[in-house]
Image (cartoon, one colour):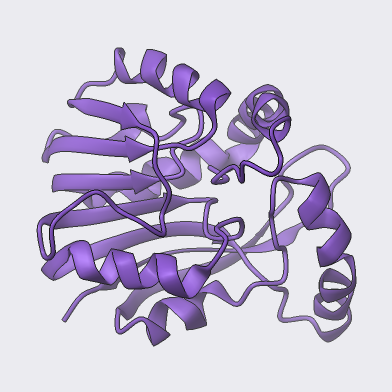
Length: 211
């Protein structure tokens, strides 16, 4: 879920209303597929209202879910109480993960890396906390490969990011993941319309391992 920037205090309340519509249109199924290989000790960044929590498999021993927005964080805590694996929800951001070096099996990012303040810093933190062989599981929307649509995303990003909690629709997230020293594998790219009347925007779903 989007990692809500404190400069946009109302976005968490708005996202709590529209997020379930996205889930019903297919986002929930994308998250279910994303988490099928999750295992061991997990950190989830930008947990939002806990939309991923029902999909963690029994191979997961515990989840530390970080969410900076207070409205979404309280909703996530309620969702954590219903999860089938242990989930602890805390205030926190992707750029400063509360975990020791090489201590985590899996980091999960679900529609979050579009809105972090600094992708490079966040992904350096992911690489730091993952054990060798650990996985970043990511489901993100990214810049379109279509020349004209990509240019339009570049054009609207400054205004859109102010309206949508810091979201940047034109980020080349997969490339930044690779530049953090993680090996991208099993990447799936697809179009997805998150709400009725919205265009099908480019999304990616995949994993990246730490050597």
